[in-house]
Length: 122
Image (tube, rainbow, N blue to C red; front, top):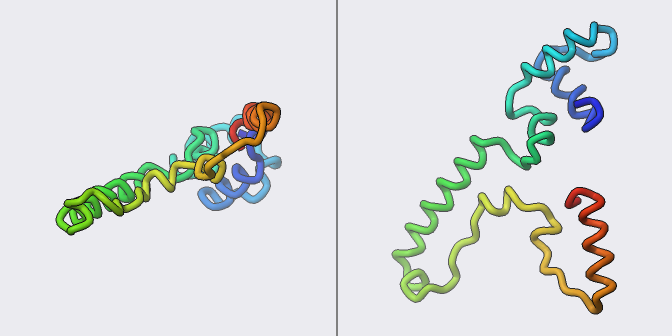
């Protein structure tokens, strides 16, 4: 966790346990505290490669389903146009995913691909 994002771990330990300097504690005790952090904590979200916690994602999905139901009863919905955007999808994708990427050459594509692979999709 420290190697992944020490700042996130420090924030989570301070917020959850009021531990402001984890280096003063034995390593085993810090490991126990880190393991006990809630799934909503910054570090656990980052380790699981999630943008938001499960509760937020479920609420966004519920809003999406409700908006689709309402939209389906409108004139636009019956004609299949102007469908509402998915909040859950917006919460899960990164800025790079949202961009419509186009490339002028094969070299430009390969350069962007290499950068994304090396940076872990960031």
